[in-house]
Length: 101
Image 1 (cartoon, rainbow, N blue to C red):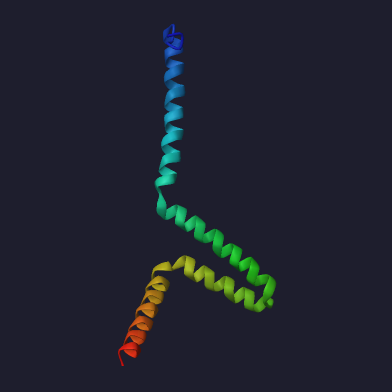
Image 2: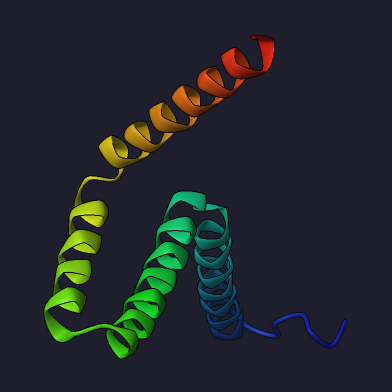
């Protein structure tokens, strides 16, 4: 039991270090459990990567339009997601009708 504090000052220091370590651990766990932030960070990285690749391939005005579009999506992801979902549903319904005819 040599790790046990020998006096009150060592106990206070040990307590403070332990609190700091626990705070850091809880912060790290909180970040890992915050799925929404992790997804947004990953999405931002992918969009930035795509934007850079597109800028290399197309003219500057087209690249600027793409960047503006990505900012709109970042600012309002829910309507874009809803629109994409509606499009997928519509395509599936059309394909289902065609296959049953």
